[in-house]
Image (tube, rainbow, N blue to C red; front, side, top):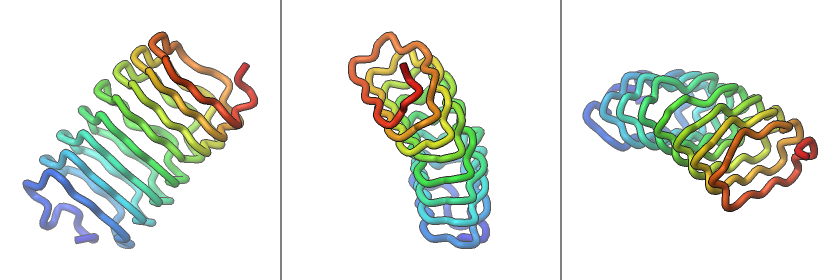
Amino acid sequence: MCNVCKTGVAGMTKVTYSSCVNLRSIDGLESVVELTIDNCPNLESVSSLPSLKSLDITDCKNLLAVRDTPILSKISVVRCFKLEELPKSPEMTHMQVQCSAIKQIGSYPSLSEIYLFNNSSLQSIGDMPKAKLVACQSSPKLNALGSMPMLTSKYFGGCPLLA
């Protein structure tokens, strides 16, 4: 199943890949709504997932791209050290990110909760008009925050450049 990611998953809505050493890409899974990927060290891209709403990726150290996820509403990306950009989705409501290569997090019009931990390259966070909770820990280069008028809870620790 790891060599050709479409094998055996046609029609499934919830898929998990764990410790798939030979997995290099995941794409074109039309019906998948929830995708979990854990410890796939050679995975480089996740794309073309038109029905995906929830994505959880952990310990994929060579992941470079996540794209073409138009209705993604929840993402958690942890210890994916080469990932430089998060997918753009106007439906995004929840985000958890721990990726040392991400320099900026763009604007997300529907995002309500964002958790950022150990993002050593993160410099800016865009406008988030519906954000109610922001937690950011150990992002030493973070120096710019966009507008967050609905914010009711925030925590920033280890972000010395924020005024």
